[in-house]
Image (cartoon, rainbow, N blue to C red; front, side, top):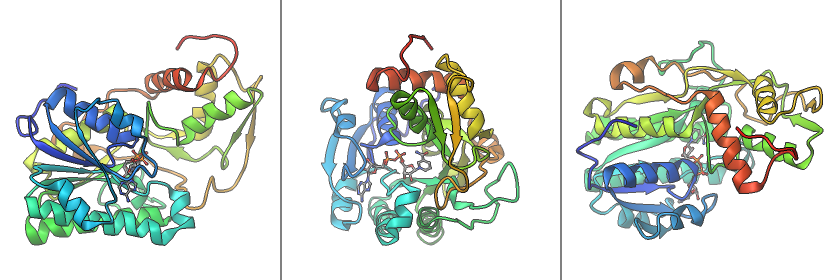
Length: 331
Ligand SMILES: NC(=O)c1ccc[n+]([C@@H]2O[C@H](COP(=O)([O-])OP(=O)(O)OC[C@H]3O[C@@H](n4cnc5c(N)ncnc54)[C@H](O)[C@@H]3O)[C@@H](O)[C@H]2O)c1
């Protein structure tokens, strides 16, 4: 990452969800390149305490829940920036427990905005491409209608609407980033992790959820972090909503084949099985971000190709969980 921002340097920054996958990478970037004074607020429901321990006391950690306004206010005290990543982040869970999903994602985001207003902080909200639902425009721009097909998409969209109105009514600089499929080191969810785990368990068969024809915009995690930093440092971004993706879309079956090839396997020695139908309730069959707005307004430029990102992810998986197949191969 080349950009360096004066405003972020040495600032007090709250990162909600900083023990999670994307939150970890964001904290790392803020500590390494901006000498930030970070507080992480996280209830560790899906986050990992190891992601906090990694920083060895370089940041303050508050274990607490964003549904509790007084804890959020305490964590946000004197912050100039709040990166709001804490969320119930699973589409299937949102279908099983929609009330909990709402409380965390909608109510929790409102709490964060209230605390942001109290401190006149800039709030950067991690929203999602799932707000769009079934799309009729590919690639999909921010002006596309939002009609989520999961409670997760809905509760995250409500969070966006709170951001929009806090900006309009209170002039609070709040920004929503519609992240597409973020992947990379330290995530133990998502289709890539699922594939590697399955191959490790049984290198003869790979079951693909859905038809394999579903197509996703996969963005490497460090490219998504660039978007967080860019909007934090630009006044132009205040009150705006931006897509954050790679600007390409890949069919899940092609991803599977690409991964097998990198592992030195092929669909001849690994039988591909398809579960068929929808991969899970609320899964979007087609995602592909139009990046025109964030590129032209902020100069966003995702750099890591899917092939390179997969190499890094496979390497990390191997170091963390062991080799996904027996014979050795370097990526
Ligand atoms: N990973 C993706 O592909 C993706 C895509 C679109 C949007 N997002 C959004 O980005 C953000 C980060 O996602 P992630 O993939 O790192 O997920 P994650 O589950 O790894 O991180 C979420 C973090 O929030 C914490 N958390 C959950 N509920 C909380 C609560 N009530 N109070 C305090 N902390 C709580 C969890 O413990 C976890 O550390 C989320 O807001 C998610 O909706 C992620």
